[in-house]
Image (cartoon, rainbow, N blue to C red; front, side, top):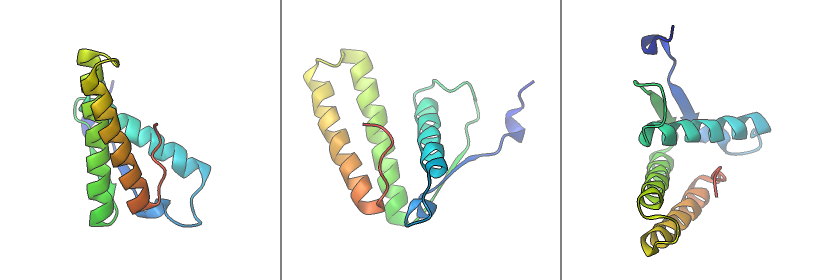
Length: 113
């Protein structure tokens, strides 16, 4: 039986992903954590009480929030109108810009393209 009260929160530590200490496990965990955040935002995650913590500098955290928000908006628009719709293309361009900004501000490669 799953008890949400006992689940540990997902922690994304953006500061730990900078520098020479980065390894394949950190990158994989980052990708999985972002996937879970998106799943929760898109109501696809079976965990009702999703808990997540983002750590890093204020700039890194804001950039992460902007980028994950752009991912959500793009997916929502693509689902509603299809990938061929001009709104989807416009949101894809905004998402690409947001990802580039995130990568520039944090030095971390966004796990989805």
